Length: 152
Image (cartoon, rainbow, N blue to C red; front, side):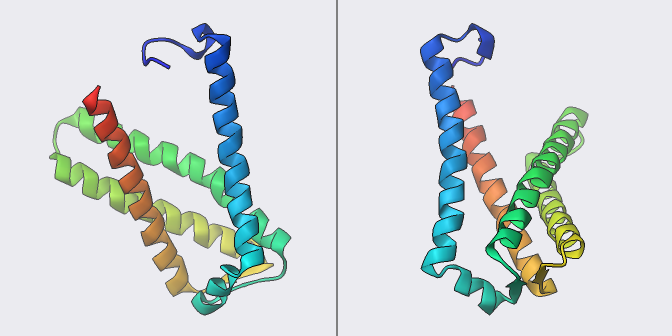
């Protein structure tokens, strides 16, 4: 799909490919969560101090993070665009700000969900560690996306 062409104008084959890719991403993520539960990755949760009542509670927590994370991702990207448009910060400062803001958004979402849901409990240290990891993953994935766009 070219950057100049809207989705409406894509060929039927391309539309089907895009929709199939999105559906596969959701199915794979659900499969990884399910496999993690059944094959013991959840044991890592016990080591980190995550306690949950049921698999459904864990699934709702993850679904909530995905929903709130989409909003948080939108806000962090808007902030980065504003920082770039202001021309007051260097690229290193913008990247550091994006990383820090991603960390704060992840920590806020995880803490809010932990407080809202009484069926899951996450220790404070675990929330910070997970937020750091998620912010780093977000930064790395975004850096890869930007480098691919610059290559074009």
